[in-house]
Length: 431
Image 1 (cartoon, one colour):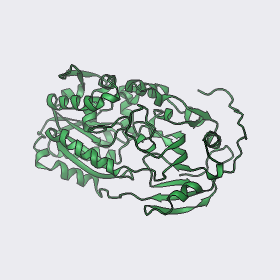
Image 2 (tube, helix red, strand yellow):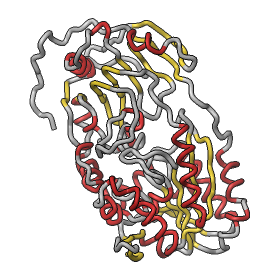
Image 3 (tube, one colour):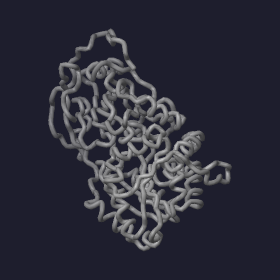
Image 4 (tube, one colour):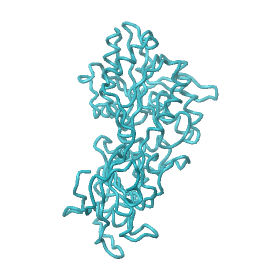
């Protein structure tokens, strides 16, 4: 994409005496499940769940594309328990337009999480074909994956968590998956056409219609702690999904990690990706939201730098537009087909825009610092995170460290030390 030599003249040049850095631990609730299979077995063994599974029935197990901790283990355990009850489960991708909005692309997304027919012990049926299930009272068409419509019953698996574009009683979770995930590209496009500002109404309207007119028997809701570990798995009968999910979302919001530095000049994000967040980097952490809707609380940040893409995002760089500066390395990894398909489907285009792209990490940091207002370089409040899922350990500059060092939930791990770069200008540590 950037096929010209990049030699941008910068007032003051690219040599800076960067502030010393500190590695600190942020402390959050660490409670987690010790055994995924045991938790799944206990939930599916509940009488309210077990009785919905009929021997010999084909069961479509709907799995999304979000980065969910232990997703393979959870899906594998659900499939195994269904088989133990005499059902014949198969897995289908319920991920809207992700994976480039193609059959094979969505299978590849599952495979990137280790979910294959061989590993999971069940067939995977991937298709972008849908049926029109009907229309809601307001005239909204509702679509359903063709394979799901042909199954005897459907089970949906998803993490319940705050969404990255809007705030409502239902955000990311089972209700959204039933409309957007199982609706595939056609359903996702239709729902997104209403705009995120209407999702407070659209998601429960479509979700409740799917519950009433399809063969969903139960959902498997997942909660994660601040360290991206599975805290809770709950099997919910179809009739209780709508009421229970609202309660789980409140719990999920309380579990979210955050950056404990109260104000930031430059935030360095090592990587973004669809496996990290639907928005590449979570606006619930950064406050940088593509939709422009309110309700996302985060420290004020002058400039955001994104250094790279995750491998599992498969070139989908949605969210990069929320950064101010990036690197050529990242831009050269972008799959514009995946990125644009995802962004166009959502109707929000800003997340797919490319920010200022410099040759390397060092140049990106210099540009970010020199374009911050009302700071001096020695006193710059710099925070570096691996991604918005992993906030247990972060790097902070001297000025930022002084703001948090006396907090009970902050522990100094190492520092001060210089932020060093290799001969090519890339930060030379593995954080």
